[in-house]
Image (tube, rainbow, N blue to C red; front, side, top):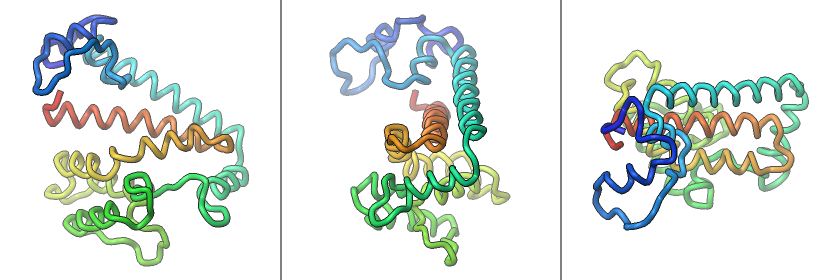
Length: 212
């Protein structure tokens, strides 16, 4: 991407970029796809066209979510939420990072998250039942790191660190679980938009960190 930022290497030419970009421990094999749509756009089409296509993709997913909301109702969405995430006993889909990272709730990933939150000066609202690794909680922390007033905490470096440690590693798995669930309608659309946004964020942080 650094070598061909504006026009890319050309459609279908990812293997050329793979072959002529040296990096440690690279396997000798033919690769014609990055397994990441945004990264494929960036490598083959360059930054301007990749940004345009990514914007169109997010817009289409947003429109699908809007359509799903129009076809649903507050009561139907609440019932779907209860069926997917609450229910009796084990929920159909978990919303907690610890489950996707360790297979269990309240495990080491939650402890690590609590340590990082403590370093940021953040604590859980004692009136809430959810643990800190709930999807809404970690997204709210990201909002704080983006829009907070304290520049020593709310900055790109902290955002990248928190995103990589506590969102990137499991949110896509949660989104896939929702997309594959037969009873998920509104939340399947929301998961598709979330997964695409997560991919954009991940590649954006990689570019900022100089990893690509």
